[in-house]
Amino acid sequence: MIKFFLFTLLNSVSIMAYSQVDTLEDLRWKNRVVLLFADGAENLSLKAQQKFIKKDKLGYEDRELVVISDIIGDKNRSDLRSKFNISEKGFTFILIGKDGGEKLRRNTVVQSIDLFDLIDSMPMRQSEMRNRKIKK
Image (cartoon, rainbow, N blue to C red):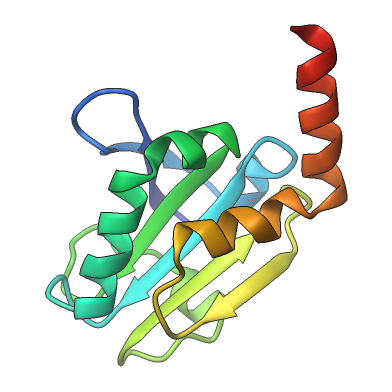
């Protein structure tokens, strides 16, 4: 069983908080997941990605995204690195859809607008947006 710490976006000043979940399966059909892998907390790509997430947290929340970080040297590392065949060096960004499938993998920083455009083009997200308009 995979154990890792889930970093969820919050409405408060603090962007990240910990809560434990057993597997990505716990998030399936509830949330989209962004996995961030880095070879250290000082990785420049990781820092840049975290700035985008913090700046655009409302967009992340609206798209029901949670962010999970696996950083070399961090005491809260996960078993996801081996599951997704991630190198111990560098930076990797992975988007997992609500269906549990990998939708995007990059070894570079992903701008929020590009991430949001991709998600907003997906059929499930289109349905969510239509349903939200009807309910208002």
